[in-house]
Amino acid sequence: MATITISRGSYSKGKEVAQKVAERLSYRCIAREVVLDACKEFDIPEIQLRRALHDSPSIFERFTHGKETFIAYFRAAFLSHLVADNVVYHGLAGHFFVERAIHVLKVRILSDMEDRIRLEMERENVSREEARRVLTNDDEERRKWSMNLYGIDTADPALYDLVIHIKDGTTVDHAAGIICEAAAFQGFQRDAWSQKAIENLALEAKVKAALVRIKSDATVSANGGIVRINVKVPREEEPEVVQELKTAAESVPGVSRVDVKVTHRVKWTDGRLFP
Image (cartoon, rainbow, N blue to C red; front, side, top):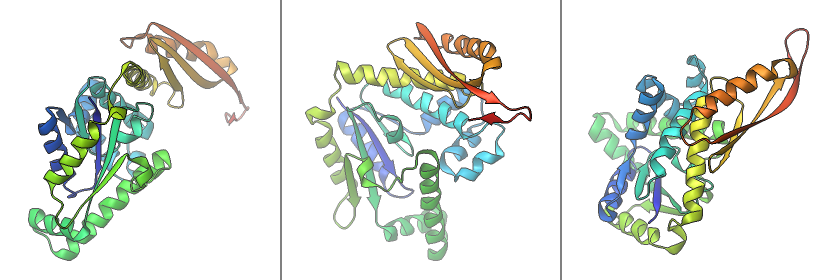
């Protein structure tokens, strides 16, 4: 069967659609659980991780560890859920992390602003003007977040396999039905190749999370249990850094071999690095 990610804005009914799809297909429906898993595994306050994932890029400046650390933790927790099949994920960022897993059906749910304003007014007991301000700000923060991390606008329909606009006579049930039909297409069924792809993505993410506080700019790729790390360091720091990276990577379950490729960086007398 397929794995489904649903991108949504606040009060867009995306959560309700995700829950209905999971119910119809007997899938697991996950969202907050991913955040909680990351918090538990990496021992960071949930409120910090949630704000880092949903607020504008400036929020990262107030953390001891930058955005790379928080995103690495979230990605590792998220992909660990997707290794198992039959999952519906709803929320921000999911579709960014499954670019090589072709069996994942990526969906965007849209809703009319007036409907969203009405729901915000009802649930938060605020004026129409305040509801509009909050929703507009929330949409902009999410856009800034994705643009800052990936140079991608979450509103771009090219990111998704399916975009559904809930309006007029379209209901949550209708949207769920459309998604369930799409998920049955052969192109979204998991096979041996796509299963290997998601397992490799998950292992890469776990290793990256293990390395991010050592060298946040290290890149990781995995094929089976073989992990390759690319890193830039000054020549004189190579032995120590390579050993530290290998030790951290080898501690990750599922890793059978670690290769580290080093590109040397020149350190000037004043401490600056080039390039």
